[in-house]
Image (cartoon, rainbow, N blue to C red):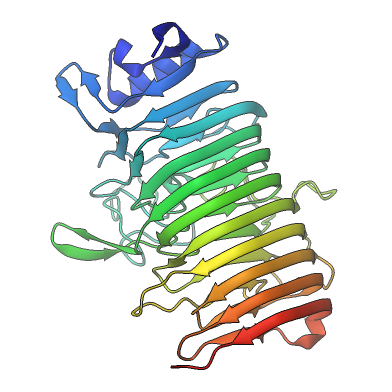
Length: 397
């Protein structure tokens, strides 16, 4: 490689994350990419693991190349793996960023800690429902929060993340908030809702693969594979009036308060080529918006349920729910949805738990014991102008 075209953290001093962040700042505004190589030439010798004590912070106009490298959270880290530098603890005014591109070359692994300090989302208490060595530690938050997310981007436009494997995430592996005009491609996940720690199996909750949160739009997600402890892919528009940006009381770093005027609707999304399952027997793909939040103009094309015999997901695709906010979203708030080409051995291939209108569900094949193709759990009164075509349940053999 021509060294004039890139910067490597091996050229800097300090901890692994200090060197990576120094390389990113050095490359800022120069047009050079930052390359994290396989070999970590630290002061104590050469290693093949980059150990993070805090988050890698990416800035506007950053190209971060992960070249056949292994990046792992340390046991003392209670932070993201990678985060857009515009957001974080105590930052209440998040300024937009642009042109952030993260991509892997060859075999790239991003891995959680051996003994995570915290896991789960903001609704989980450490040591009670989900693992964390911070459980019972004075001065430390006893709930999960946005710091448990692997890759977290907020208010970023024109971005891409591709060719990365993420294993044993502490919460959602990738979460985007109010970000737009981007691509996620060739993402592999490997999390199981538990982990053997010091010889004991410990529960780790909320291990989604990819989450799109409030305000995300004009995004392509293509070729998602593997398995997760929770939903493999989820679009969730859930607003809470009392949320504050940069606070630990939320799993959204940018706050889940609705900005109004439709700015926080999730819209104009293409999700295709999903091959995987939920090891925690949740959903493979989930679309969820609560009252006052809209979700529309979404194309889901190609879901193959790859779950093994001992695991059966709740649904290959679940749309809506009545357990969040004030119940089922009003008819019309979840609309213009196309779901096409689904092969499922989940309990239900297409589970409608909320409202849905102006939608098409086509080419659905459900197979396996105790499986059904479509279930409208919320009741037909919450459906309007929804067309089902080529929906088949195979006989059990």
